[in-house]
Every structure is written in C-alpha cells, then in structure tokens.
Length: 124
Image 1: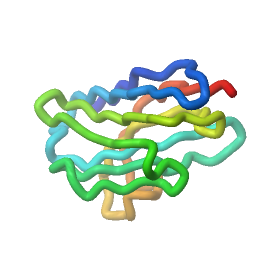
Image 2 (image 1 turned 90 degrees about the vertical axis):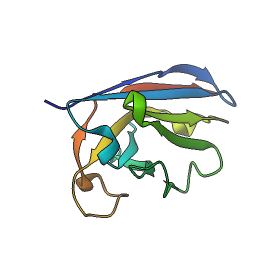
Image 3 (image 1 turned 120 degrees about the vertical axis):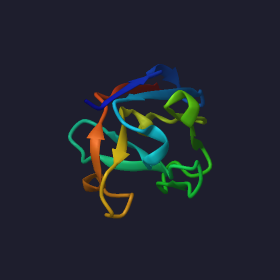
Image 4 (image 1 turned 180 degrees about the vertical axis):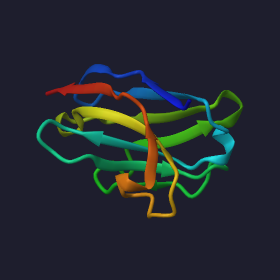
C-alpha cells in the first residue's frame, strides 16, 4: 500500500521560508516522477512543481517560479519543497503526489497517489 506523508507546514510571516517534506513508502520511489500541488479554500488544486525520477526536468507554476525549489532524495524516498519569500497568497494545503499516468505533469489527473496534505499559512 502506497503512503505519502507530508510534513513541515505551519504558520510563517510574509517573507519567511518553510521546507516541506514528503516521505514515501509502498512504491519504488526512484522509479516515479513526483509533484507538489496546493489547494486554497474554495479554489481548485493548483500545480506547484514537478521533478522526474532522476531529479531533473524541474518545472514550476508561474506563481512560485524563483521562490520555490523542488528536490528529492531517492536514497531516503523523500520529496522536498523549499519555499522562500512566502506571501499570504501562498496560504493553502500542500500535497505531494506520485505521477502514475502519461498525462502532462501539471494536471492533477496525472497523479494516482496523494498525501493527506500539510497546511501552510502565511500571515501579512
């Protein structure tokens, strides 16, 4: 059974930083492309970042480019999201996901496994 467990969320002031982690089990992590998404109250789940199984082919949503960095450690089966210069509009529940289909990586439908999410709240 696949489990993706996010951690590292919390409350931070605008301009601050957080680093999210996603621990994976039940799958061969090094064989899977991974992504981060976020969902604010009343809004759709939005693409944040993706990384291929080898740690390359990085891609970011327009709103986080230059501020967020996705990375992974295959030896630890862990995905990361370093978030800098956080702004109130970054407030959302952040989800990690494992890509299981050939659909484009920016769409949630490409991912078959999801974590439970971690709350990030940025105060102004």
